[in-house]
Image (cartoon, rainbow, N blue to C red; front, side, top):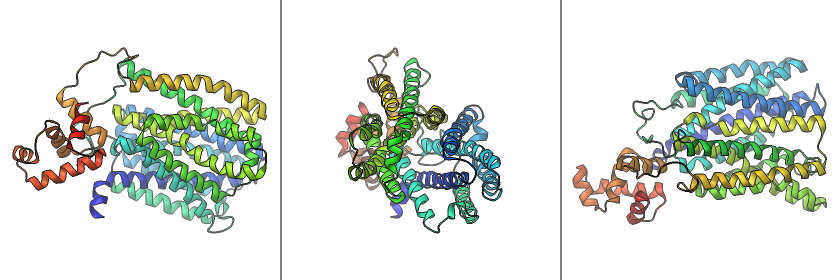
Length: 470
């Protein structure tokens, strides 16, 4: 157990930090949303809670991206983020205790800007320290914990979310998050050592450069794909029939199904990113399709439950795709961009729906029209990214030995020693030969080779050698 924790320390800590942040954000979101019912009608609450609040969150993410790109010594440091969490305390207190609808609306906006800032930090932290091959499940598990934790907290007492007791729970969570941050690392990589000083932080060169024409094209296509996926998701989950059907399933079932979907989506994304993306695209049609086909409440209750599983695929894809892109290109400020783009686009659609209203026919037409460019652009993005010498203006060149070694280590999150040994394994050297070259014992070499096989998921040395040379 101790060995497992030691080998997976970065993964575990990043999961815990993201999970705690999502739990805190969820509790604050529901607390403020429930309080809004004391002052406003349902239409206004919808516009504020998932319209203006999402827009503010997108602004917060954008602000973090700009700060990290231009002032990483400030925005990606723990103390800056600790300050952002501490600032939330008076916002929480004012939201709960000040009996004013306008003040509450203002607190919702302020809080979501702050949420965008520290969400950017946690995403970047994961992109820096979690291997790219495990970012999907890291995010999926953390988000699932936050979803279930919100429901469990709500069971402690009826009306807890809107009582002053929630302040105590929120402050405990903030304290835990701050402790995690102070004990752990900054979400920034220094130029001197390629990492924050951690022995298992990979020191690598970019596998995908966003400075090239191909890299910029992939980035733009991914941004546009997410920007189209977000409105489709919002239209589907905000159409009248779907909202009505969702009331037939209780909160526990909703959260449980959603948690399962998030974890499943994370596993699939890490196993095969193309399939993970395809699942996310296909999942967007589900809310509209089910309301067209199922009309009997008995069937709808079952199918709505499954819809919460499917919703997890887009949630994971919009976050993990950009976290992975940031990890592979070493442009870490890009990690939260997918969520930021999605939040802004979702906010615009929700505000449009709130203002003019979308009936079932309009929802079907809008989703149908948006699906055409989505499928085309998703195909072009996949083709550009995974067919590196087709449709690309980059000049094909052979990787140098140093670049190949760095790329392989970065892809699987290998330590410096494992990186060195994997190179020698690729040359066909035996454990004895490697031990002699590195002045280590054969037992030590066997231990490192075993770790390399575990991290890469490969069966034997020959497979490692083939993958290294590919």
